[in-house]
Length: 138
Image (cartoon, rainbow, N blue to C red; front, side, top):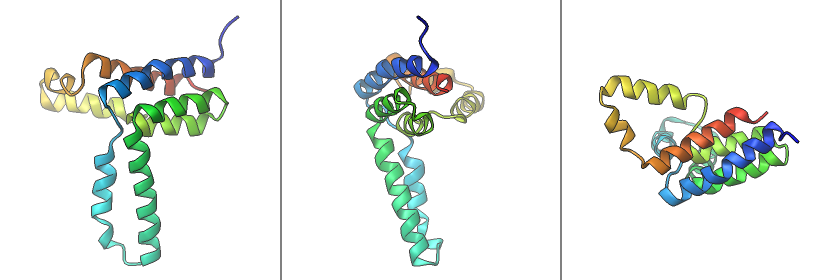
């Protein structure tokens, strides 16, 4: 019996989440924190509070790292694919633009060891498994 794409994606998120937890890898919280620093330019207090709540929520989900990847895999398994993909993307920091940013960084730095040394081999394996899970889910 063949597995559906969502089940394959779920089974990829299991080792990905565990590897990300073991290596302490999380999503890109610095980007959201940078957005929090520049909230003073928004004049309306209500809009500023809504944007603050959204950014703080994104920071909290991104800080969950591997746990968010595991939760996203469970959501994909339960056929809540869009929400699961979003959670995996926030937790691991992988999404559509992640390979492009990685490729751009490799080209601009001219030093692949600099980019590769950011995470251990297990960390990179977890990131690529999470990215594959996002791509496979339908």
